[in-house]
Image (cartoon, rainbow, N blue to C red; front, side):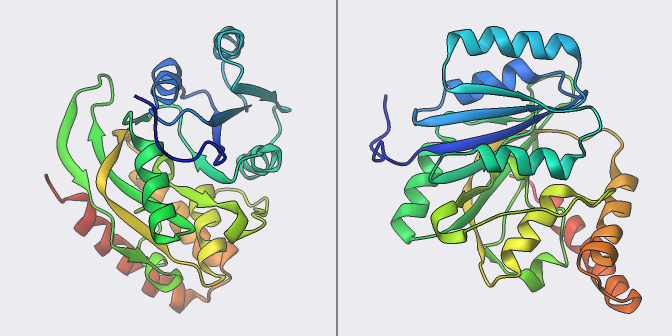
Length: 257
């Protein structure tokens, strides 16, 4: 069944294809199965396995909405995102990871919500799935009704990038500095929130997110780097936000359905 959203609203989807993309076919299928059909998928080939690239090219032959961009191996994640965003032609911008799966109504539900409430920046609840299967676990991560720059500083890992949608006509230019060892997507959200925008949470599971494998230490280190090197906060401000970030993450990520 096709969506009733006006066909004019093209959604540009950015996917960075990296070595961990063992579920790439499932991810792309979840995009192709969307009830909202006016989208383009821009895949940035960034240090991925060669066999992934050949699979993508086969998929492109079947669907002209899918585009592949190959970048040099030395390209960092921030620059890869900037390349994808720069190529995007859509009114709306969305993101997805190579190991995540969208619900079939993800784009349709999100567009309806944003257009009905004149919202420029949104995310959604998501459910965790098993690392090696598509079996859903009981954990549902619930988004706050709205998040500001100040509140996001206290939980920089809360929002799943694969649930985000941005109205580019309202938000304007998005350009990420090439910082290493930070959570790139969190830096994007902060750069938008810092301009006074808010991100609104849709109270519905629109994403099935694969359970991370032993990434806790990495997330901690990237959060600290985000405070110190991107937001240029002093050590006391960084420590305060860091402690609250840990508390908030425990609170939201332990919510069960």
